[in-house]
Image (tube, rainbow, N blue to C red; front, top):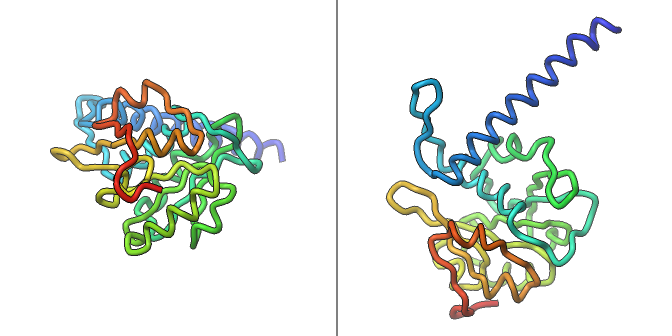
Length: 200
């Protein structure tokens, strides 16, 4: 029994260290958004890794009007573009003083205890009704659907010269009671301060 615990302990520590290394790399990628040098080798994070890192870090730079439930949930609505990447970044972390987790939801009506909702491009055909439903909850809406912020979403991923950038609809976020850190706004590609056409 003791031998088993001795073996399990170092393995658990190693897994934790590995997650920490990945998290540090992706946080650097979030800021540099380019290739990273590690032991003389160039490492370029994938688009999924960068977007997953952004999603997690949004939780650090946004203040929620209220956080419901026992966990801080990052929810994925529609087809999951991240696979295990987002889960590995979030595992064992805390946001808003609560354990962070990732949930896959089938509809906006399941988002009552979600703090961040990533809306997949598979949901584009009924985006407007989805945003109307999500407006009932204190959920930060994020997507890479074209014109997402102009249609009432809060943060939109955009690709620019093979880099992942994001646009913030500050008006929509503030209307929902969110406080967005100036540090996050500084690294945004663009900040929309007025409600766009069709905004919720």
